[in-house]
Image 1 (cartoon, one colour):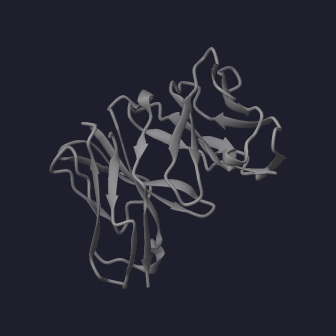
Image 2 (cartoon, each protein chain N blue to C red):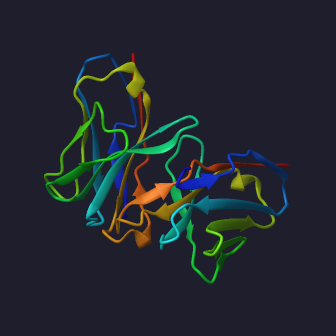
Length: 113
Length: 111
């Protein structure tokens, strides 16, 4: 089944404790992206990647890191999480031509206390 | 001005009603248009692409008006299961791969 897999689905952590949210797709998509979604603010892009070893900042990159060492994986790293990073996070992927739309992962609900 | 604007709603309609959402986009050179559906706390899912000539998928009809830069979604014979947030999506003109998401219109279908 073609899908984008995110883990974990839910995570509660403490301020300053490094964490990684994994994202993997099995569709051989070139493009992958991370979003956060907060009430009233819609989807905001954090980082994106056009292909292996090619990443770039989205609209709200502060406090996040990403890497793209393999085509299928695009982990999101929070080196020192803070409470304002409490949010619902989605990974998405697509072919390089966006006319096919994006496929989203099931989401990760992160709470930083 | 936001690149993609939608009425946040909520639209509260009875079962069986016909409901229409509109969305406006700012860049006249945009080429790809979509409607996504998002259930509460779940991932957005592609509902349908929007083509210049308009297109229909069962009870759902999407229209594109390039001159006025708006996209519409019509839902006929609303079902309780249609209750969700509907996101209007447009491609970013300077990029072949980036999509811009509206903040969504919430639909509540009541019995």
